[in-house]
Amino acid sequence: MSGFFGVASKEDCVFDLFYGTDYHSHLGTRRAGLAVYDAQDGFSKAIHNIENAPFRTKFTSEFSALKGNIGIGCISDFQAQPILVRSHHGTFAITTVGKINNAEELVDGIIRDKAHFFEMQNGEINPTELVAALINQKENFIDGIRYAQEVIDGSLTMLVLTPKGIYAARDKLGRTPVQIGEKSDGYCISFESFAYLNLGYKDCKELGPGEVVVVTADGVKTLVDPGKKMKMCTFLWIYYGYPSSSYEGHSVEQARYNCGRLLAMRDNAKPDIVAGIPDSGVAHAIGYANQSGFPYARPFVKYTPTWPRSFMPPTQSKRDLIAKMKLIPIHDLIDGKRLLLIDDSIVRGTQLRETTEFLYESGADEVHIRIGCPPLMYSCKYLGFSRSTAKMELITHRVIMRLEGREPDDELIEQYLDPDSEKYARMVEEIRRELHFTSLRYHRLDDMLKATGVDPDCLCTYCWNGKE
Image 1 (cartoon, rainbow, N blue to C red):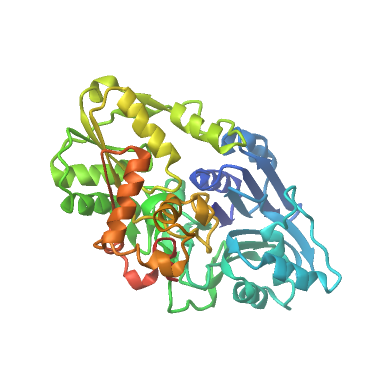
Image 2: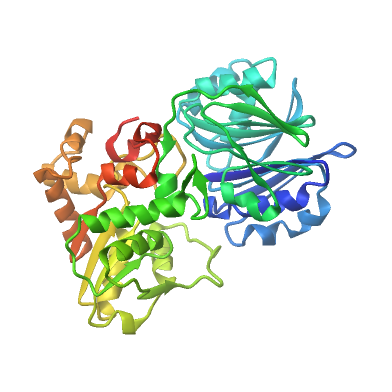
């Protein structure tokens, strides 16, 4: 995943840009960058690896060295960005959020015109560089941005920094958000709505699907009107969005409370304690506890003082071990207790199984698991979510293959989607047994969509039911 922030100000923008970008640290763990434009000095850019240190630590020197009235920043799980590009449009900087499924096809088409791309260490092309190349196929930025959004299979939201202002373009189906904030000396553009509040900005507008605007210190001008169809990622409310954010006017934290409340209304468990897996399941657990009347407590806590950007080994087994090492038990709240734990989702199941075993070893009598979304059946093809892994790594696919004796295709998966069906119950029971839970229940899709408060027709549910 990635998050971005942009500022167009009558004063120097670096302070707001630095902290506004830093507020997106929950959306990326590998690369971060800043690009600014100054009328006298032109463009300046800095990109750092943030795998082993927070954004602020790596960009301290740039905080005092960079200067300019307009700028953009990005924190990413994947490619280095923003990138600087020189083309027939002039020099510009660009940062993107999304996923390009047909990258090879698009790259080959551009290379045929005797162009070239720089390969990253993994041999792939930087997706943001590809987007810049697509924009350059047209005679102006507006046509170039619209062209890129049309030819890309996947999703594409972007910021383009030019000497005259910042172009902001939301994905054509609005899969990711773009928020505009305003104050007396300028405007900001943000993925997360909360990122600008402590910097003195107030809500100005939220871009609609496919909307393109240009932002300067004097105002926001719409260049392409928003479309009518939206398919925003539901997972932003369930997991990826920061608790203090709102999308389409609906609070992330409130949606998670609602998820827990609706889970409790369909449940019959009798735990001593309700708890959330820190930090992804905490809000869901509070909603569950408030509705059920069972006490909320923290039988374990996550150790964070030195771990937010700890080195992550290359092997999954070691990463799982480090994730487990962060959780510190509180034995007085575990020993002899019936625990009900809530998390946002189950992907492979490895970490949640180890957490459960760790609780049993710490003296728990029962560990009931509740999940804030339905079973994940498909890997996301629209956004670069680290939790959306290859299909055969999903525990649901492994279990269905074990039950059916063959690799599940769409037709077979369809038979396991109905939460009231026998096959669904068999799948959930098999997952429960494999992961050693006392009991297991997932959220229903209809309840989860209701919890967000958003019109279900405007939400993407692909990773749960394969429907676009």
